[in-house]
Length: 281
Image 1 (spheres, rainbow, N blue to C red):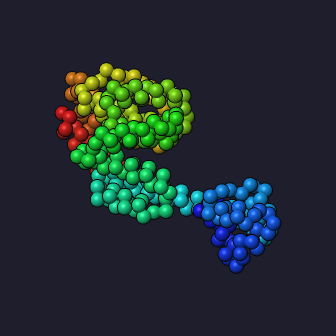
Image 2 (cartoon, rainbow, N blue to C red):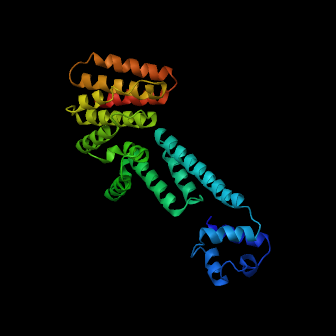
Image 3 (tube, rainbow, N blue to C red):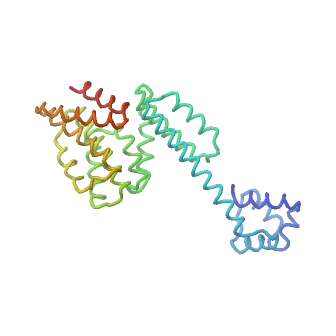
């Protein structure tokens, strides 16, 4: 809702014509454009208009806070559903979320952004849906964000498969230089997830030239309950890499980590890790 729409709502509730509602504060022709959201009132005129009609300024603007809060929760719920559908590899659920977005109250920009996100995840889940235009759109979306903010890190982490290993190594080195001294646990969590993805891509490409750089760069990240999962993941992939290099005894350590994850209640993820070993050894 915009200011003009909310003013009109208050005017109609009071049963007033536009002329009666505005008095001599602005002209009727100008105010008519305000209600249509074709022009804006100055701050002083808006305050005068609210006072003239005995509308609480605080209550008026709290309407926007309520709407923004509702919209924020709606976006968060949609994002949670997208992530859940992706990590459970549920294509049907992902398509249902897509339909939900089209019928939501999100503005056109947010709808377009979320649909692009879903199309990207669907392409990761089903490679037949992959195409150059989609990959280009996602890359542009990521790098339209000026610096490596938390939002940009999250987007990049999810879609690293759309880049070559060499490109991912260059991008990740840039990220590490920017955040080498960060104490922000949310940023640290994303960086650890990015390092995990680098290790996965390195194993799949049988290219381990830069692995030590990435694993050494995160030694300063103190292990906390929040970061423990990713530290276990990194240990899992590190031992697989050592096994790939020839020390097959390291496979035992990777298997122990799978068992720990399974006992912690993450049985589906432990099965994914087991499959990863099978597919790459």
